[in-house]
Image 1: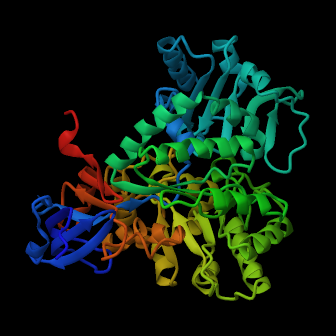
Image 2 (image 1 turned 180 degrees about the horizontal axis):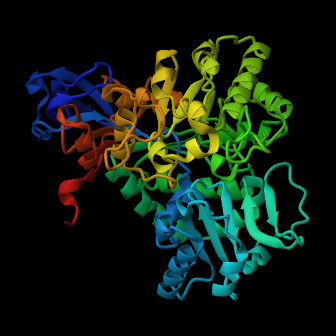
Image 3 (image 1 turned 90 degrees about the vertical axis):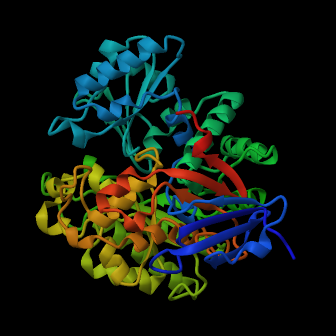
Length: 549
């Protein structure tokens, strides 16, 4: 009789198929789960080399699947190459002071890069400009990325290094200017800041490998076993080379998570290169899983597309980044080629537009209710008009959302949209009640990989101090629903529900063990939970016992 390599035992096994955990075990052979059972029905699987780990009352569950990550930029953001302290700045002046302190600690840097400044954290202050950065940094390029990664703030030296003149013809986004026509250092949305992003990502191959190894360790320490690359990179030689760095690491046995890549949908319906890329990157750990595009921006800069004007800026409702007909034409062709499309859509107008596009694609491809189960997804869905909620299930569209954004952006929608429209912000309960599939993630580096704050936000709708956050506490969901969104929901987005997302015999052995049983904790106790063990592909990739105190 076949024996197991590893058996994980606990009084709390959450497979994702039931509402509550049960006492039992998960047995692993090679890189797959060979058995899941109740009580001690595993004795016949114990051999001389079997590793039996008894976790008593700790919760064992599928490895967390983060459905929305900006992986490659995130690897840099998690390293010493980027100043992340500015996340905590409360004003433009304080932010610049933090960057100065970082620069003093790193005199060897040829450019200064930071991430995390956020207009909502600066009260009603106007957006920053290059003036303050030029005063502090006249000679070295400075690139500061907003927390939502939709705005870059540069000094003049960085504008020069990126060869941004202000005369560029853009399909989308905007290069900020002062009233007299001079560049003000602000770059809005991806097409505008692409040249700056190229400078941010300019690191030697050996450094990229090392910081990714460090990144793997951090991700695995959070119990996360699958992530995505959602930056919608254009398909070119530079992009291929970036992916090949990870491919090399996989061949060398150093890749300890599954990465699902989503290059840009683009604005021309020609996907020959995308198909070639999908053929090149198609392993169990590194693969092209679909295509991504932006429908709108973010509410913090009034670039999210709303159905009605902003409460605090009544002269605008935002606008789509690309014309609807362009995205519709591309989506129809991409779906025909077997690519699921993931649309960034934050405003209720953008969500409706994305649903309209998916509906048109389903009809054009003779797939009216998405019977072919293409993984068309709307990312963020921060505000949805109530009449559009049933369309997710009807069209087979997945809602990929980041619960902790509700806390991070607490009160921002109230300011931008008013109380009535904020009743449909992050509507997790309403989506589930309407039959939609939910998938959770962090949008890293916007929010850290630690899944417990996001789970807490979804089940409580409260901030870190336990106070109600947002305008609709009735949108809270159960712990089991939140965990499924963080496991099987993500697996479904990636088209891998047959391999990942639940603890079942025959599935890949991606498993997390927690320090506590979440189902026995108060909601506040969820925030204090830790991961004690992470198994990915049948290998222990993180063990808290081996970490330095």
